[in-house]
Length: 133
Image 1 (cartoon, helix red, strand yellow):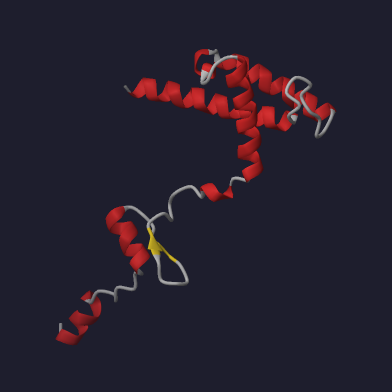
Image 2: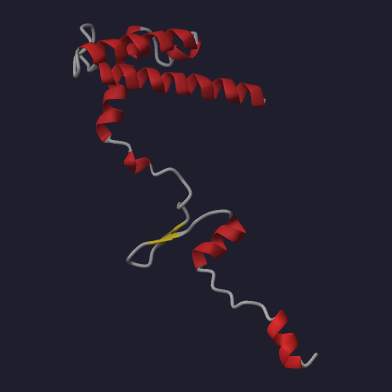
């Protein structure tokens, strides 16, 4: 076999990876470069800025109401099924009266739905962390 033939068969392909691909390969992350050349290694992280501010504000308003009525973080001491039931009640009320408000709080049923989902996710996360300990 002549040298040219060997080189043709064994030559490596040129490295065409971008800096972002190299960062992912070595660091397990995606680096994002903006128009000004700034780089931030957050390409694989959730885009928290996609959550509508009204969602956060209304969910927090329901949670604040509950904290004043019961105690801050009282939800951590209540059975998960109670929040599933509350979620279902508010969902049924929303379906029967779209954009309706809860008579006690004056806040939209959708805000109560969001708060109950947030609590259920929080309880599930707490349980998962306990299992890992």
